[in-house]
Length: 140
Image (tube, rainbow, N blue to C red; front, side, top):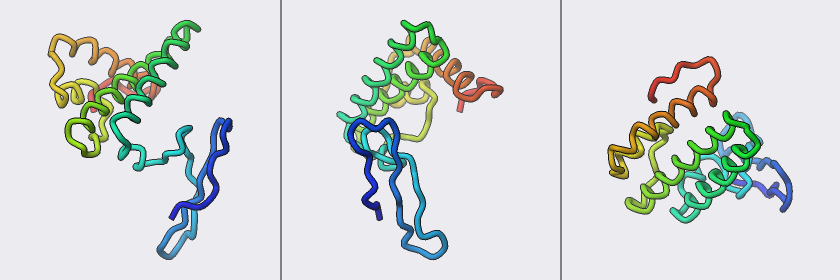
Protein backbone atom coordinates (compact mmCIF):
# COMPACT_ATOMS: atom_id res chain seq x y z
CA UNK A 1 0.00 0.00 0.00
CA UNK A 2 1.32 3.46 -0.82
CA UNK A 3 2.04 5.63 2.18
CA UNK A 4 1.52 9.33 2.58
CA UNK A 5 5.03 10.62 1.77
CA UNK A 6 4.29 12.33 -1.55
CA UNK A 7 6.43 14.83 -3.44
CA UNK A 8 5.69 18.47 -2.73
CA UNK A 9 5.33 20.75 -5.78
CA UNK A 10 8.68 22.17 -6.85
CA UNK A 11 10.84 19.37 -5.42
CA UNK A 12 13.38 17.94 -7.84
CA UNK A 13 13.23 14.41 -6.52
CA UNK A 14 11.26 12.51 -3.96
CA UNK A 15 10.50 9.09 -2.57
CA UNK A 16 7.40 7.23 -1.47
CA UNK A 17 7.30 4.72 1.32
CA UNK A 18 5.73 1.42 0.29
CA UNK A 19 4.45 -0.95 2.96
CA UNK A 20 4.86 -4.66 2.31
CA UNK A 21 1.74 -6.77 3.06
CA UNK A 22 3.94 -9.83 3.72
CA UNK A 23 6.61 -10.78 6.26
CA UNK A 24 10.18 -9.57 6.14
CA UNK A 25 10.78 -5.93 5.31
CA UNK A 26 7.86 -3.86 6.44
CA UNK A 27 8.50 -1.01 4.06
CA UNK A 28 10.91 0.43 1.53
CA UNK A 29 11.47 3.78 -0.07
CA UNK A 30 11.34 4.08 -3.85
CA UNK A 31 12.00 7.03 -6.16
CA UNK A 32 9.00 8.86 -7.53
CA UNK A 33 8.95 10.43 -10.98
CA UNK A 34 8.31 14.14 -11.32
CA UNK A 35 4.72 13.30 -12.21
CA UNK A 36 4.21 11.28 -9.01
CA UNK A 37 3.98 7.94 -10.85
CA UNK A 38 6.29 5.13 -9.77
CA UNK A 39 7.70 1.91 -11.19
CA UNK A 40 5.42 -0.41 -13.15
CA UNK A 41 2.51 1.99 -12.46
CA UNK A 42 4.13 4.34 -14.97
CA UNK A 43 3.55 1.81 -17.77
CA UNK A 44 -0.20 1.68 -17.01
CA UNK A 45 -0.79 5.34 -17.78
CA UNK A 46 -2.94 6.68 -20.56
CA UNK A 47 -1.69 7.33 -24.10
CA UNK A 48 -2.02 11.05 -23.38
CA UNK A 49 0.41 10.75 -20.47
CA UNK A 50 2.87 8.77 -22.64
CA UNK A 51 2.73 11.62 -25.19
CA UNK A 52 3.39 14.13 -22.40
CA UNK A 53 6.44 12.10 -21.33
CA UNK A 54 7.65 11.97 -24.94
CA UNK A 55 7.21 15.72 -25.43
CA UNK A 56 9.03 16.47 -22.17
CA UNK A 57 11.96 14.25 -23.18
CA UNK A 58 12.08 15.81 -26.65
CA UNK A 59 12.23 19.31 -25.18
CA UNK A 60 14.98 18.18 -22.81
CA UNK A 61 16.91 16.75 -25.78
CA UNK A 62 16.59 20.08 -27.59
CA UNK A 63 17.90 22.01 -24.58
CA UNK A 64 20.84 19.62 -24.25
CA UNK A 65 21.55 19.83 -27.97
CA UNK A 66 21.72 23.62 -27.79
CA UNK A 67 24.14 23.22 -24.88
CA UNK A 68 26.23 20.84 -27.04
CA UNK A 69 25.70 17.99 -24.58
CA UNK A 70 25.58 15.38 -27.37
CA UNK A 71 25.51 12.20 -25.27
CA UNK A 72 22.75 13.40 -22.96
CA UNK A 73 20.79 14.84 -25.89
CA UNK A 74 20.89 11.46 -27.66
CA UNK A 75 19.63 9.70 -24.52
CA UNK A 76 16.63 12.00 -24.24
CA UNK A 77 15.95 11.91 -27.99
CA UNK A 78 15.82 8.11 -27.89
CA UNK A 79 13.55 8.22 -24.86
CA UNK A 80 11.22 10.66 -26.61
CA UNK A 81 10.86 8.35 -29.61
CA UNK A 82 10.46 5.27 -27.41
CA UNK A 83 7.70 6.91 -25.36
CA UNK A 84 5.94 8.17 -28.49
CA UNK A 85 5.90 4.61 -29.87
CA UNK A 86 4.61 3.32 -26.55
CA UNK A 87 1.86 5.96 -26.60
CA UNK A 88 0.78 4.61 -29.99
CA UNK A 89 0.82 1.04 -28.69
CA UNK A 90 -1.20 1.87 -25.56
CA UNK A 91 -3.67 3.86 -27.67
CA UNK A 92 -4.12 1.00 -30.15
CA UNK A 93 -4.33 -1.90 -27.69
CA UNK A 94 -5.24 -0.43 -24.30
CA UNK A 95 -2.60 -2.77 -22.84
CA UNK A 96 0.79 -2.23 -21.25
CA UNK A 97 3.52 -1.52 -23.77
CA UNK A 98 6.38 -4.02 -23.99
CA UNK A 99 9.38 -3.45 -21.74
CA UNK A 100 11.86 -2.94 -24.57
CA UNK A 101 14.05 0.00 -25.54
CA UNK A 102 14.92 -1.07 -29.08
CA UNK A 103 13.29 1.44 -31.42
CA UNK A 104 13.29 -1.00 -34.35
CA UNK A 105 11.24 -3.53 -32.39
CA UNK A 106 8.82 -0.81 -31.29
CA UNK A 107 8.63 0.60 -34.82
CA UNK A 108 7.71 -2.85 -36.13
CA UNK A 109 4.92 -3.08 -33.56
CA UNK A 110 3.45 0.28 -34.60
CA UNK A 111 4.00 -0.55 -38.30
CA UNK A 112 6.32 2.36 -39.09
CA UNK A 113 7.68 2.54 -42.65
CA UNK A 114 10.89 0.54 -42.98
CA UNK A 115 12.74 3.44 -44.58
CA UNK A 116 12.89 5.01 -41.09
CA UNK A 117 14.57 1.96 -39.57
CA UNK A 118 18.20 3.01 -40.27
CA UNK A 119 17.74 6.26 -38.33
CA UNK A 120 15.92 4.46 -35.52
CA UNK A 121 18.63 1.81 -35.36
CA UNK A 122 21.34 4.48 -35.14
CA UNK A 123 19.49 6.27 -32.34
CA UNK A 124 19.06 2.98 -30.47
CA UNK A 125 22.77 2.16 -30.82
CA UNK A 126 23.80 5.63 -29.62
CA UNK A 127 21.37 5.34 -26.70
CA UNK A 128 22.75 1.96 -25.64
CA UNK A 129 26.36 3.08 -25.86
CA UNK A 130 25.65 6.23 -23.83
CA UNK A 131 23.22 4.75 -21.32
CA UNK A 132 25.48 1.80 -20.55
CA UNK A 133 29.12 2.90 -20.89
CA UNK A 134 31.50 0.04 -21.67
CA UNK A 135 28.74 -2.16 -23.10
CA UNK A 136 28.49 -3.25 -26.70
CA UNK A 137 25.76 -1.79 -28.90
CA UNK A 138 23.85 -4.99 -29.63
CA UNK A 139 20.06 -4.96 -30.02
CA UNK A 140 18.01 -6.03 -27.00
